[in-house]
Image 1 (tube, rainbow over the protein chains, first blue to last red):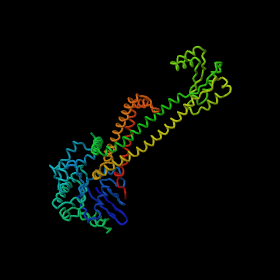
Image 2: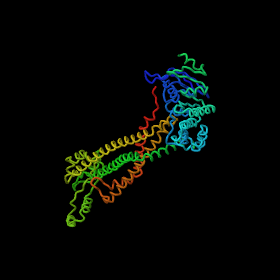
Image 3: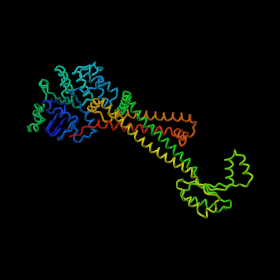
Image 4: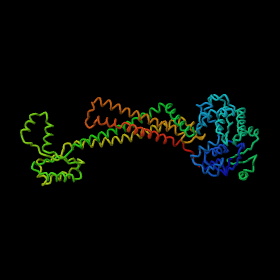
Length: 232
Length: 314
């Protein structure tokens, strides 16, 4: 589903964000990527959503070879990947419903489909009855669940969550993680970055540790990344 | 409805909403575009009017060759065909003695004494050839021909060249050329200014909504889905400005036509201008709409380009 082969990202001569990272994620897998701030987690995710281009290396997501990707294909790529951001990135002047509907409007869904789909997704993330609230009237955890609803409403095969719990207290953080697990059970590949050790321990999933732009451990499925570990 | 159509409708709807919401910016942008379009419109009409005035005066220019009464039919025919062979000659008309008398009587119909005097003698007026040149500034070839001694011998009077009129035409021509150039300069300057202002209006609108645009990008909105509403908004500026400029022009002509009783103000023939405008109303409206839409679409496309670029640095 996701394949990174010796991917390097250099921002400038003194700042190598990723150093020959190799990673293979199977469909329907739930992978946690951990590492301290600046280890390269966010860069890795930005490469997957094509907010950044790798300096070298190969990236293939859902059969799409990023080397062959043209600028005009980027919107199509991003429609296949759901993304949840640490800072939610909700539209403040739109209601919960409208925020989720927005993701569908962009790709040309009609009003009837939107009215049918959005409430179901809000139900999945546990926000039934809050459709008309504005983002600022919600708690952080609720906002993040709106963002998750928006990310999954188009039923992407892959969900990328970049520190979704970073701004949340433990209780709300766990609510968000439970929603991600639920989505994973429905068959979506989930890539979660966090530096919350408690979540990592509780989840008991494959954990990829990144340090200084390299994969230093891949606990559940070490065989995929032998090459990367051999670099250590 | 398919997704493509829904998307296009959504883009148009969003553009219209933005147009209404950014009312103050929209008015500023439209005011400048209105001035631009009005200048273009006036330049077109004024140009046509001056060209028409010059054409009319030029038409009156001719070279009159007065013939002796003794000239034979054959000699006259030869002269006419010779003159027609000269490149700059557009037309050679023959005015017989009787015609000349008729014209004279018509011109002096209120002067009874003169009419009486002329009727008591034989027709004293000579027959003449009226030569209309294509270009009144280049009558040298014609002049050379009529000044030839053998041709000169057939003439009763000195050739008349309408010299005084030519000077007036030159003046008008120069004025027209100047006005035309000033018009073009005005069009260029105001088009650039209005593009810049619309450009900045859109940039400001983009700046106000940059978070929203970034989110749209991250959610996979196509370039057209983001850019479209801005283009729709500025195209609306163009449409409204074009309609208003045509309305302004139309009312000016209506007012001036009644104020001056459709008379002619020197070289500015208001009646002609007004007719020119009225006859081509739909063409002019279409042209104005096209220019307005073009200016609007071009400036918003340029303004959004930088913001919609994908990062391509490695």
